[in-house]
Length: 500
Image (cartoon, rainbow, N blue to C red; front, side, top):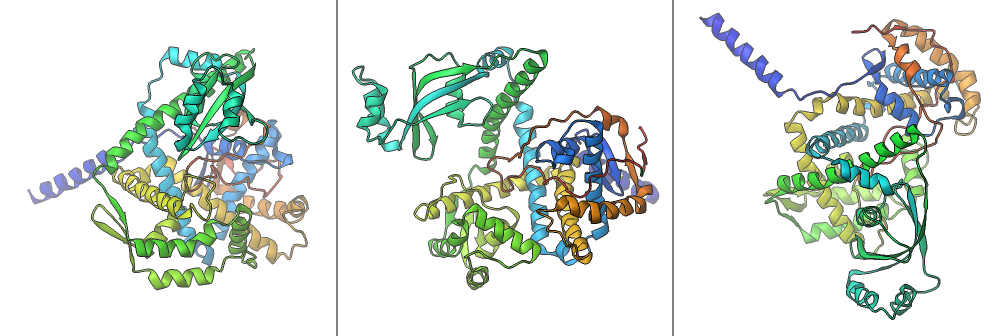
């Protein structure tokens, strides 16, 4: 009876564990190197969502092999460099990878609570497809919320032209014009107004809310129509239209889910601590993108920091107030130190990209509110076991291996006393140093490498340069940069992957 009782308990635990395991999306594995895998999805995105070097830009099989060799080389360098080193053990790097993983978990939460619940009707899709080939030319002006009523009153006066209204509200110079295209992301209100019905030349659209305290009014000047002629063009446009409709509907459904998660939670800031933090961090956030990139490069490669921000002083200032209570949410108090740690995993995302010295405090507050919201969504994702979803694990591993390989590559070239500036003479460095080194790694790990060449041959790639960014995400770059490690065209190592 005792053994029977133990068996029943063990069986119950196993069944409970299986019941809690989240459903896994199907993955097509293209290659494997040790315990690392390269999925077909990763291969395509690493080739399509970044700018490839000229030697790998095409769709011929030789280019596909170079791309795969480059991705496998990245995995091998990550394995060779290992994770028992100062860079891999650095808390900032570990927070970055954890932040990437948690961002992927929230994406999976969005997929399940948003995308999966979308229902697109055939007539809705057909109507959107009907206008998706148009690029509209419009004249426009923008006003603050306080001026919307005046604009509406002026537009309703038949004696006034659109240009007259622009002059009356204080417009200076020529009336601004722009082009609106379905193919490029735009404001939801604008896109819905322009592409949901038939428009005529001279028609006035708006005022439409662009964002916080900003409204635009447009006049249709004309349009160009690009007709999808071939079956392939029709298919691609239908897919594009459907994808956009699904995304916008999913965002609305997900917004309702987020409201449910945050219902009843009130966030309050401690004014003294808040403005002290603002004073400390404002110089960093008001830097230009170029200055921030130089800072990132300096820290990664241990070069001299040429930026104007004194990070040592910033760290000291934070240390002095780290125990101050900063905010309270749902009865829980966050200290300044906790916010600093959370930002290390979840960089702040500002709703308004054009932050000024005057608007920084309010925009910083909104960014912190969004970070707190994402914290609760991440907790919900952990409860559902989304950290164990293969898509999430693969996403985090992709960024981890890219960083580890990049550091190892840099250390190897330094050890070889390379005479080349890699950013300028990468082809020479590849030919002299990296190709032979990658060949040696292919030999060393050959018995741990498997490749599905049948899948590789069927892959179709474009020659269009793209650099894909995710909107409103703490980590906006969709995939790591293309690994410039080898231009080897041969798959003369490893084994053919066995079919299940």
